[in-house]
Length: 495
Image 1 (cartoon, one colour):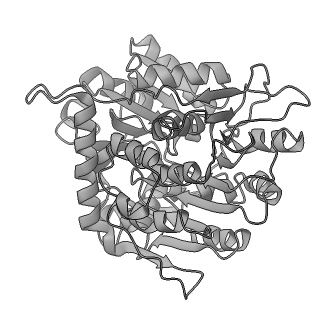
Image 2 (cartoon, rainbow, N blue to C red; image 1 turned 135 degrees about the vertical axis):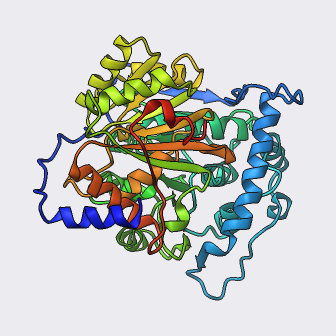
């Protein structure tokens, strides 16, 4: 937004009454269906990575293209972000140093080979600092922050596998807790399975809605990945034996421990862990109050945080645009429909504020003949899984969703994100972290992407202005305005 537009927003704020609170999205992660056996998988067959189409110009395969883009993103990251990480060691006498290669970590051969096979030639910025602490002996607790797509998942997955002994008596040795089933499944399929491809006999269980364990049965999985409600349920039923657990991971940790999120369940899980269990907390966003709480929750953690403010969390390959639809005939829903009528976009995600609105947008676009699907907390676990898989496979090109997919979910070919509703918290205030996570669903591995925010009233304009101000230095413009004209929008966006 320009300085003039921001000034106009400030003038109007005093006149604007606080809006009525929208019905909040139900917590997505823990539906109460327990009608399927717990998924336990041996790592005999690694999954095929989702990848873009081959580069016809040079004969590059999809897998090679993805690896090359990962390398380019790494190099760009190192150029721009190296000096932004602030490392705080709990033990001032420790001399843990950052590493420049995976070989320096003295990993077992089966893990080192798997890391290279996944296309990680050298550590990312966050991995350089985090991995020596994750793999340290004795283990170090860690609070780690880095941009979306920077290698956090690979770092803590490597840590879990490094601590897991497959030849030990069968019992749980690591737990990874995430806010949503989609993220839990993604960590399992996209990170753990390929990284554990050489660990014959490894057992993993997914603790998500729709999975269950027979009454009285003890889980023999080495690693459990799941959502907080389901993991708490299994712990209360003594299905998970905790005495041998060596690592607890909280992914998207700010959501896991913030007061309005999953704090109660996260604290219950942490309380059940052995005293010497290593705690790893990772996220792209860590508000100061959450860091303060996390530091109290975890004993003497090392901290790797991005300093100099949230400005450096925004991925710079994402083109950010806002469009005022107040005078558009038919309003923002018609404008959204017209975007897809005029442009060939590939895959995109549309974020809305409520389940009801998600269903409404889905009905409208479906009636117009667009290949779209809908996913939110009111959709059954089975349908959520099939919807997500169809979107990954390209069978659906437009995914309408709530904040259930705002965090962590990674689909390579998402070219555009639309904030149909700008993100607000439960009190109607601007939700800065959710905005950052939403737009981070595009621009993956250094690809260009576009994030469009639709404005429909004065309040939504005020919210977006506040979000831009939060992430930018004084006077800078982060989100550019475009005309409410789908025909000319192609010149503005990166597709």
